Image (cartoon, rainbow, N blue to C red):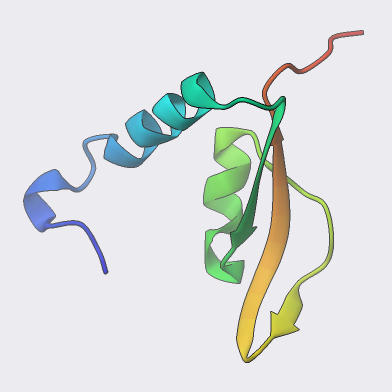
Length: 72
């Protein structure tokens, strides 16, 4: 299901993501991304942690976002 056209391109997805990060109780957030959305997740700071998988006919790519990124 896609967002209504009047809400598209207003940063709603990014705003929701920021809320999830603020409320997270762990240092990492994981998602199973559609192969078509991997680039979008990468723009948010996620990284692929495994190759594309197929389970029960559903293709996905496991991805990880580190909330407290360590700088070296």
